[in-house]
Image (cartoon, rainbow, N blue to C red; front, side, top):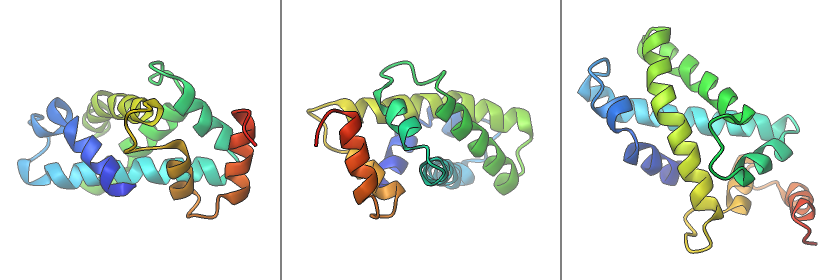
Length: 148
């Protein structure tokens, strides 16, 4: 999942990272990788702390992801990681995150819900977040969708 999400981050990193004068060009890839890792880490943390319903809700929220609590939590995590790993101040990291994360999460949820795009699936994401130990979790998720 990391590589697919990294590609999505890089695809939408334009003004937030690549064209941002606060991000040295030689750090563009590292910032994208850090943001990707931070997104995945936060999603894993949410999943491991009983937040599977939050993740499912996020992926069912359609175009309204920017105001979703999980996106806020992910954004905070990315800001912290960018400040820690690259020495950005809070305003710079916040600017990068505000331009990048809602767009990336929106595109991720869109791809997950698009029946013609199998690059991301809810089951695949949940399996990645639960390290393949999601049998019971996946059955619970299927129950949320009315499948057995």
